[in-house]
Length: 175
Image (cartoon, rainbow, N blue to C red; front, side):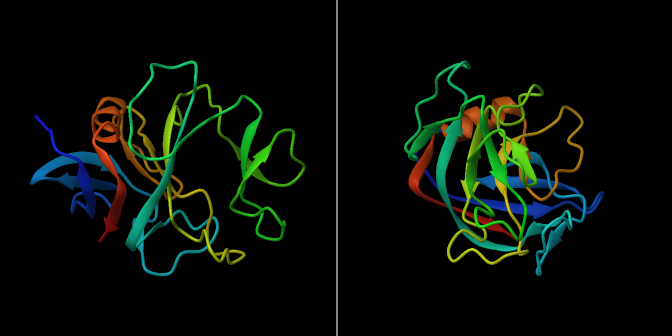
């Protein structure tokens, strides 16, 4: 199976559906879900597009009540009161926030477990441009690989296997 540290993840759309893709590592393809608007060159908040480009994986967020995972990425714990601001006009746009939070946000501690392990993709992270898109992550997919809001999502098992091998300088290339 997969052994050496991973330095690049390549993501491509598959022809059958705009929101289905494959993530390629070492010549092996893993099915993944993409944003409902497929891969886009111009990303805007709420458009459902997965941004095209080459990005760093900034770090890993994980729920501490789930099975531990060894990972070379900087890792932070998700708290039950953790959210992510997706309100373009708020000063904390595209940043983690503590709940309750009055502005629009995503909860990071989810009952559907899609965010048990989340890699923060370096999209619109510095400088942050209001309205350019927020909370673009690599996270777990739903069993049917239905569309995300703009993230890349893998099966929970594939995600754990890959995160166990991702190098500290890993890039994700979304094509």
